Image (cartoon, rainbow, N blue to C red; front, side, top):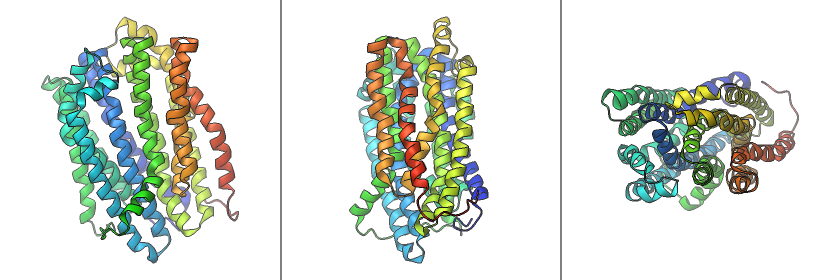
Length: 446
């Protein structure tokens, strides 16, 4: 695929299909775990996985930091021509080294400090043993989840988006059937869900590695030079994508603690469902951004603003479609999600519709805000990308989560994210419109 010359609409469509498949299967890991555990152990199992969720967010966010950050530099160097070949190798080497180090650190923290972490994330005496049992097999494969994110990002930029999707698909399919087999077939319960998840990640990793034996592979290792400076650039380019996922973990912690203070365990079980729905919505937004990133970065390196604007138009259409679908689903069929993810009690059924509908309003603007971070960082504009990530992921959202229930009552907690997404989307839209007018006006190709 020629990212500098092919029709942008067809090119973006192929990348979006691959990225969406990859993101969809990635989200299925968490969804299937939640559904199987919820059906096997009821609301307590769902609540326990809500407590574990921030750990996933941290691991995946670091994978995005090295993967997106490194691949943005990689693709920009490639777009600049032959002079960038050495820079391509240096970018891949730096990303790989950083991923290995960060993966080892995450592994050590999860293995040594699982109980304090889970208590900080909202676990109490009833939920802690369940959460620890799920994490027991996962501990041994923590670096795999981070490396899978990094390698998939580079494969998409190396002209192999299909293989990246196939790798995630292979692991995801195993996870779906493995969950059922281990949880119900072998009667391992929540432990079986964790075991299926880590084995699925191992399968994904092995499939991703086959790219390096392909004649189409151009990813090369280079002797690290000015490694510290390159790591800083990579971190700057990838921070926004990283923080989007890390912020989900931060928000989950804040929600967990506020829910247990104001609403109780049944509301936490419903929030566990929302965590998974939000993961699906975010993965749709990731797919839009990840499909656009290689095209944006390489054409930015080549100075092709006509193709950048065409890619932006395609991305916004995809974002609108995902936004409308998920918002409509949350408003129209909240109890469908409840029955998918657990065997509910009457108390859960009574409170779930209002919670899901209120929180679900955020899905209307969430994909747009997340895509904007990919757009800005793909054009090496870290400041607006960071501003969006931090504002929606910590500052505005955190303030609302902490203050709304105290000021307006417990039900107001569920409006924190819809208000956040609206407040962030308005200036982002204005900035993106201004940015898209940069350069010589040419006919769009999408």
